[in-house]
Image 1 (tube, rainbow, N blue to C red):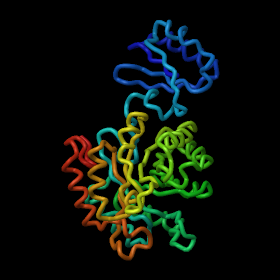
Image 2 (cartoon, rainbow, N blue to C red):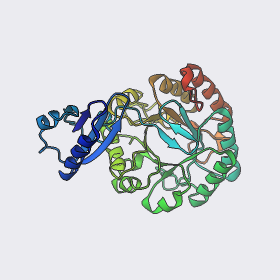
Image 3 (cartoon, helix red, strand yellow):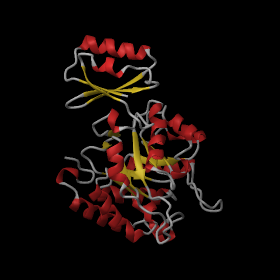
Image 4 (cartoon, helix red, strand yellow):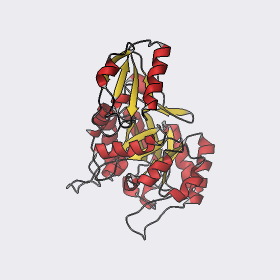
Length: 339
């Protein structure tokens, strides 16, 4: 249920209303916009009398919300959420670009790529230390050593870092990581999501390869219900009958998620297509359709990459993508520059 207040509600009346709602075991999420203040009521609201609430002097309207996700719902939070990440933001006036290798392989590799993507305009650095792989015999990442190398690249360039967590037991290693990524395979690892909801760190949540948008938002709700509202949604392609590409990039997810939720939405064209030459057109399409940013894999030597080389761009190709994306963005939304 949401309660829409009139402009400039009387403070004492508002305090009385909130105290009464809390006495009914209702959790209140307050969202203050330019025109209205909205109280999002989470809990068993079936016993609340809508007509009684509407009759209050400070209340303009009351609506029941049918969707099972409340915190992630735009009805509870009219304005787009902007998430601060170290020295940058995601959502709002900055088109964010997260770039870097699928897997961290050496100090030279991650530092070289980090400097290259920063020079091209990336706002955050990605790099995999723990790698979930379909085959148990494939390279699984450098793990703790990889995280240390990623933090060295962060110190070198000043770029905030994004890396994937696979298991709760790894959480204590992520203290200096700026954004924790939850991969597609873990989107419905609810115990992990609940724990991440207690961290207060920004969480980049990837859509599962066979998950609906409602299931993605319900996973976001698990994180937000724990008190962490810093969730970034990531569309990375879904599994369909098509075999020409690694996955099928669902660009329609961007406007739909923007309609349903206030959370920022980024597109990962690298995993979505699995083909390096397709990254540029899909990145342009993502920017055109209204995404808040991109997540792109960049490797200094894709042919010899230990992981996902076929979908990785060279630093030169990434710089070309950045130039092309900036050419189609509104002036106020140039990648990494803001207004």
